[in-house]
Length: 317
Image (cartoon, rainbow, N blue to C red; front, side):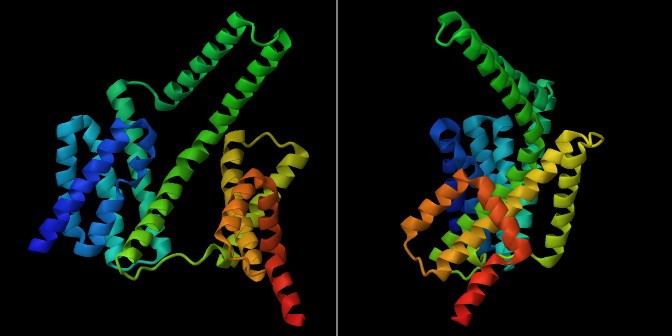
């Protein structure tokens, strides 16, 4: 191993340890836990897989000295499964799609390992514990309202029913959240790593601008089956299929069409030559407030081709 590799390995090892300790000890920075792989990704691009693996193992040992071996294992798994694998992908100049897949698989392994580890150590089912804690918190809030008489009896009943409904919805959405989290954080790590490596002067296979995203024909017709199936189930009130499966599938379908709706919006802004970043950020924020409308726009653009219509009209003029 060259001297430069040893030096950079030590530097990125220290950076990984610092990010881990900050995310662990300072609650407001807990989100940083999902960026722990980034130092190993950059190191893997610069020095290769061997150096990044050694650095990740060294960082895990150091974290174990501060947090104990049990707490160090999940953080070390993030560096190894996500950081080193993505670092190798960058080193080999994989496409952005393949990098997201690798990051997603790495985060999925991490989440599964955390859940299994929790159940083995505590002997408690993770999902049961999660919702039991949520229900206990809800009961404590309702007990507080009942003893303080802040709200009337009718409002208390309405609030209780709303909380119970929200818990049921969360139970239905839990599988979607567990599946979506690895995808989201895998993509975020790729985007952040792309930005850092470009700043360092590296050429990386990045994503196309969002305005240029279009759905592949195969996926378009595949999703049409789910849209048609959901329509039939709603019309005929079919109950043979468990609701949790329907919610999980349609959640992902809606996410895909929401992204296509955002792509349509930014394509239109490009068509109108809107370059002000403040306006674009505002529109992005507003899009999340009207998710349903943006999702419908994504469906319309996918199957009607709205962007081609206004682009074509501009060419005719």
